[in-house]
Image (cartoon, rainbow, N blue to C red; front, side, top):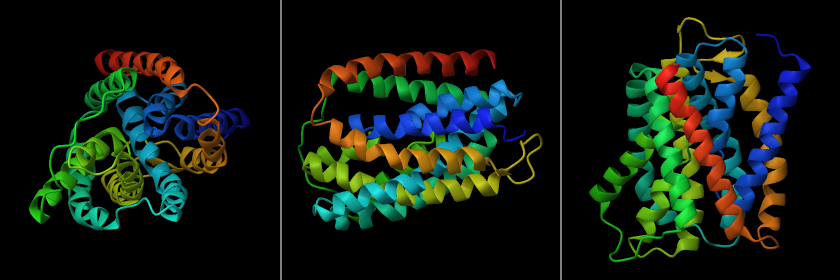
Length: 271
C-alpha cells in the first residue's frame, strides 16, 4: 500500500475531527477511529478480518500520545487521584496483556467487529440517556482494584478504547467525584494504551497479508498522522465545550455512533 497524498489527507482529516470531538464531548477517539480506519483499509483491499484488527490496534496506539496531553492538563488542576491510578494500573497491565496477546490474536476480526459494534452501541445509549451510576460505597482494597483493573484492561484491548467507559462509572459508583474519576481515567489511559499496543505489536508479528508500514497489527501511517493531528484540535474542542450546547451535541453524536455501530455489525456479519 503506497502512502499517496489522498491517504495522508484522509488520515489527517480523521485525526483533526477525532481530536476535536474528543475534546468537545469528553469521549475517547477509539469509537470514531475504529470504524473509519476499517473503512480506509478496506477501501484499499485489506481483507475485513485483518482491517478490523488493525483498526482496533492502531486506534489504541494513538491513545499513548493523546493521553499524555490529557493527563497533564488534569494533573495541573490537581484532579488526578494517583493513589487510585496506582491501585488499578497493575491489573490493567495484566488484563491488557491477556487480551492483546492472547484473546485478540485468537479471535477473528469479524468477531471483534461484533464486539466493537456492541461497545459503541452501548456507549451511544449511555451518551443519549446521560445516565450516571449512584455512588454507594468506597473503593475496594488491593485485590478488588487488581480485578477491576484487569477487566478494564482486557475489555479495552478488545475494542481499542482507553477504558473510560468502564473505569469512570466504576470509580463514581465507589464515591469518587466525577471530575476526579474522569481525570484518573485519563491517567489510566497511558498504561492501557502502552500495554495493549505492545501486545498488538507482538501478536501481529508474522501475520500474513499485513500492508506495508505495519508494526504487528499497528498501522504506522495512521498512528503517526492521526495522533499528530488529534492533539492539535483536542484543546480547541475542550474550549468550545463551554460555549456550545453539549447536551444537544451529544444526541447528534449518539446518532452517528449508532450508524458506525451498524457498519461494524454489517462488517462482522458479512465481512
